[in-house]
Length: 453
Ligand SMILES: Cc1cc2nc3c(=O)[nH]c(=O)nc-3n(C[C@H](O)[C@H](O)[C@H](O)COP(=O)(O)OP(=O)(O)OC[C@H]3O[C@@H](n4cnc5c(N)ncnc54)[C@H](O)[C@@H]3O)c2cc1C
Image (cartoon, rainbow, N blue to C red; front, side, top):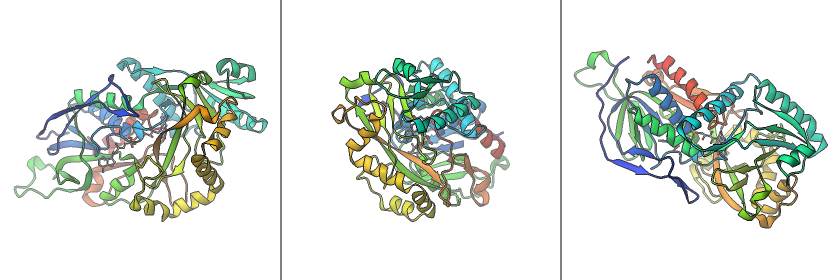
């Protein structure tokens, strides 16, 4: 254990993050424009994973000095602020897998956390609905999986009970998961940040990390035998120094890893998910979350009906290869991101395995009528006039070179002297928002073990 001289420079900058024009005054976060200084641990990435990990670390090590470095002007700007807002219950994942354990534990921790902090959430439940006979064996297998994963209060229900819960939804059989809920994940992220700051942590926004390297040794030699710090440089030439670095870079986690000499794989391939929004006059059609029975041949859960904390109802998202990481419109294009994805053999293999799914997703993305047809399988009363195009999110999908989606944690270090003092979270098992508090425990264990804090 060690302590370092600690300096904070700069002005206080209070913000209220808005997405979709909806401002939220319940949780706000103070950020400091700190663009220099020396810390024990720097955490790069101000999304829910970085913030949850930083909070967990400062709770365990209150004597150390921590800083979060985030490239945007606000926290939770990307995946953590652009998602479905569902607190998943953990039904889908392979029993015994880390993903299953972290989701079930993460959901329970989230409910406790939100209750403690007064963050509004709704346990509005979810139905996974089979609309065709051929889906029923898969639905039953999924139910068994949920039981094995210890998801609380799961039930299989028939058509009459489906109608009682969701009067406008048709279905032959459904899994009823009352433990599933909704929350504003951005608000949860900002709450982690607020707690982190109250515990003495620093948050610096508008600091895009461009380089991670060893700082040159001071001519006087090391102080008290301490190692020379790591220098973290921003795209504007500012520098922060730290003894240890943790990166949680979401859509850029592979690029941040490469900064300390790690392999480009697993590669992050961005998948955009576009939502449709139900017009307010038709909100009565949906009570809680309604999901399809997932097709095991395809990687994503399928379009769903999701109520939001602000009272709106979103339909979707689909999953289409994005031409830009953090590109939220179909017209966003980055030559670097595009070439990086399309030249990657792992993506070629994924595309070949899921060709029909990919073509159908592009078609449905382009033509609302095609998506409505799919949604009408669950709510026949829905028409094209009831919906409009909504916002989008971009998923950071980690892919290996064989085209497999990476489901588990991928931690990486780096080469040479940096290797033992940098930890990259290249992939955290999704749904990483639901699992964030449980993921933070695993990351903190890894940090403490590797860095011997
Ligand atoms: C469409 C969609 C729907 C989803 N729905 C759900 C859901 O309903 N429930 C659920 O639990 N999960 C859901 N998820 C998953 C969940 O949102 C993500 O797993 C989670 O937010 C990932 O958090 P993160 O911190 O890893 O990434 P991010 O939130 O993307 O944060 C990474 C941060 O790192 C920063 N960064 C990157 N590079 C640099 C750099 N060089 N310097 C400084 N900062 C940098 C970025 O700006 C960003 O703020 C969904 C995701 C998507 C995309």
